[in-house]
Length: 113
Length: 112
Image (tube, rainbow over all chains, first blue to last red; front, side, top):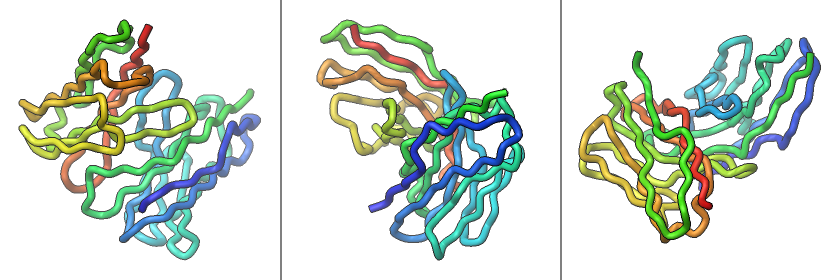
């Protein structure tokens, strides 16, 4: 079956620090990969995505590269801000099976001033 | 503005009562989904629908029911058969292709 494993949190950083949140996956077929962000008390927002190997998704200073050889999709940001404090979810969707987004358990990020 | 609305934001229910959560979208999406979120467990799929008057069970459908009478609407009923209904419920929608799902703001259900 399909599964997503992401690093457990919580992760606490100081403002302007470098962020990495690891995500690895197992999937049948060729998945699309996503990072979603959830701010306190809100729904999920798509942060970035990549649909094929070696694609790089980027948005708001966040980046993640689809690495098929290591089955990974690690999220990075060079300089975090207090406003980046949220829960980050890695997810996958196997091509064509639109109904099935498989999520990791989420990583809580707290950025201190 | 296009988007997904869920109501109410907070909902309290007594044990033994059914309760219905609303989800409406004006994105003209064909597919709609319901997820349940519990602390430390990520999101789990309850039901999904890819066309009006048709829907399929997800991973944790027991104790829930849905309907899809209109393209824009996909209400979820949490029945008294659901043993542990206290959770945050998220509705999402998407086109049939590509595969990005867009989420509503969620409803937090608490059983008293």
